[in-house]
Image (cartoon, rainbow, N blue to C red):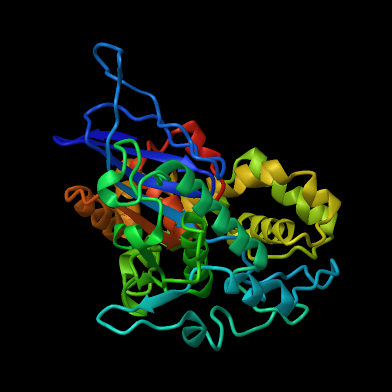
Length: 393
C-alpha cells in the first residue's frame, strides 16, 4: 500500500511477525518491501525513480512498526486433557531470559514515574482459570520472548547504522546510531497493558540494542486506560462495534465455503468431538490451539497437523470476515466494511498518520495483538488482495 506525500512516501509491508505500517522517506520515490532476515546489517533497499528508472538514494526520516506479541499460551485449550497436553508454569517462566534483556520501565497515561513490569503483573494477566497442567493462560512463553528478541535483531539489521556513534553521523539509508545511549530518544515504544505485549516490547528493544542490555532502562508507554484502549479491537464501550462484531461472527459461521467447512469437519471427526468450541469460534479456536502447541512443542493430533496449512487459510479468511462485520454477506458490503474497520482500528490508524505528518527521525514501535495487526492490514490494503486473504490471523 502506498500513498504519495508532499515530503515523502508511506509504505506498508509484512515483515516476519510484524507489520511495518509506515516507512517515511525523504524521497518521493517508491520503496520496496522491507525484508530483514538476520542480525548482519542488510544492504539499503534499491530505489529507482519512477520516471527515469535510475537508482536513487533513500533517506529515512521515520519508521513505524506494529507487531503482534510473541508466542503465548492459549486463552483456553478445551482439548488439552483428552490430548494429554499439559501447560505448565515453567512454559511462561521467563525470569532467566529477562535477566539478560534490557530493563524497561512502564509509563501509564498521565504517570510520570516508571513502573517495573514485575510489579504491574504480579497477579498475572488474562483469564483467572488455569490451563490443564496449572499454567497461566494468555501469557508470553519463553519461545515468544525469544521470537521478540529475534524481531528486534531483524529491525537492527535494517535500521541501525553500526558505524555511527551519534544521530548526526547516521547515513541516509539508516535511521539509528549504533549505541543505545545515542539512540534512546529516537526509539519510542508503546504497548497495550497486557503481560504478553509488554514483555514482547522488552524483547524487541533488547534485540534492537543487545550490547550492554542491562545498563540503561528503556521506556515503554502504556496505551490508554483499560476502558479506553485503542491499540487493539475492543468493543466494550461501543455498542455499534459490538453489533458489527457479533454480526461478523454469525455471518462468517453461516457462510463458510467448502474449504472452511471441510477443515472443521476433518478436525471434528478425527478428534471425535474432543476439539470442541462454539460454532462461531471453531476455526479461530482450532487454529489458536494448534499454533500455541506447535510454538511450545506440545503434542498435536496427527489429523490436525495434516490440515495445518488449510486451517491457517480458513481461519484467516474467517477472522477477516469477522473484523469486517461480515460485509461480503450484507446488502451494502463496501459501507459495512468501511464502518467496521474504522470502528475497530480507526483511532490507531489516525494516531499513526498524525505522526507521519511530523517526521522525527524516530523508530516507533507498537506492541499489540492479532486484533491489532489484522485490522490495520484490512484498513490499508485492498480487501480482495490475494496475499491478505491467506495471511495468518
